[in-house]
Image (cartoon, rainbow, N blue to C red):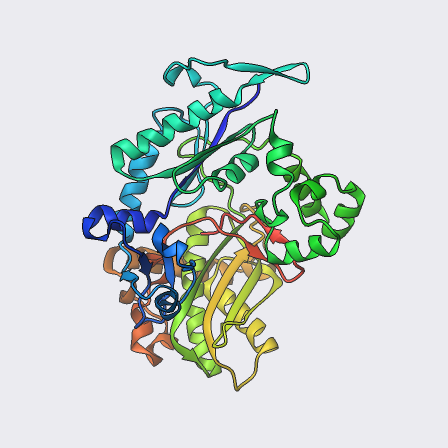
Length: 442
């Protein structure tokens, strides 16, 4: 049976929630920004008015004010965003139990087997497409509009919805009519709608992949879809097969049920430092702060041990750099931090000015790695038990209750609970070879 997949994307979500909290913001250019004092003063979300003035997510506050002098800057209220996100997903759950999160403000819904729940549709439900019977564009739009109208009526939030026969095209569709619109990419129209779009619009095509594809003369999704399989796979390896599958609308990945965890391929955290890091010791201390969060989340995930550590660095000129290396399977903070530090010193030496750092681990073994002599002898196991004890103590008494000695060099870092203050969201990282991993990173 042909599937009916929706991708819903709440419009300007953070800014929209702020307007629900304060009606005086209605109709005005608004930007939700991080703290300037903590060097996180960038635009996290913006209203449609600010967007039209050229304000972009990731702009610094001063850039936003220069582009839009009358912009209103508000701080984030993540608890409120999470609460509204849950309310929206409760509406989705009335139509189907197949609701897969893609961050706080995006979801896929599979309503293939629940069309009877929707209000009656007066038009033609099916059309003939190449001798096959498929759902009509009008019926599919009716499905998307029903969900969109429910969210708007009950919560006062607008959502853009893409409706298609697979997840990738549904997500493409949700970007076509913003804000507050429904787009249909059907069996009958997908080539005319999708193939002329820039290749960068395709899920998992980041800047590096886009540049490589453009160098090959593949600037649109249609050109990628028509490309020779061998050529693409030679250039991108296994990732090339994924690119072709997505471009051609052949993706058959299911929408996961409510509560079913997304397959995690990486776990990581990054942060902007309160001030530029200019010494190796400062960098090492901050890497330990990040590694504690990553190691704790890795242990909680139940995915076993990781065999690859990735380091991401952004300097004071906002240039970014990433590097990775294979390591012995581990879930220990100390080992992850030291591997990240080794990567840093292999690429940087004073003088430097580091604005932001990130650590990600990948290559989880599912708990089936062969024990090394060190592990069999108890050294690794003892250290892991100690770190798990620290996890439990912090859950009961707070992050600052137990600290490593290196944190004593800076009192502020003793309270820098990266794990406790970062939202979980999907992410992906571009590896040093230019390929990309659809990470499901937390």
